[in-house]
Image (tube, rainbow, N blue to C red; front, side, top):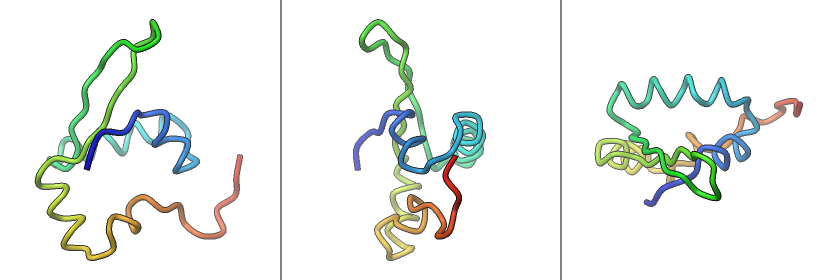
Amino acid sequence: MGEAEFGLVQKQLDLSASVVSKHVTVLTDAGYVEHRKAVRDTRQRVWLRLTRRGQLDVHEAGDGGRRVTTPPQGRRRR
């Protein structure tokens, strides 16, 4: 599994930046996600990736991460 830019994750999940940021903080503190900051197109970007622990837990879930990355059904779009 590679990296994903914060904005892409936010868009895919259809959540506000603040909500995604809070979840990323919790997942980082738990050792599931790591992040790095880099400048791209003159703007600072945040890149996210699963840690080894995060990868193992997604694999053990047996759904390829769909349970974690798929928004709930019936969710209203903003």
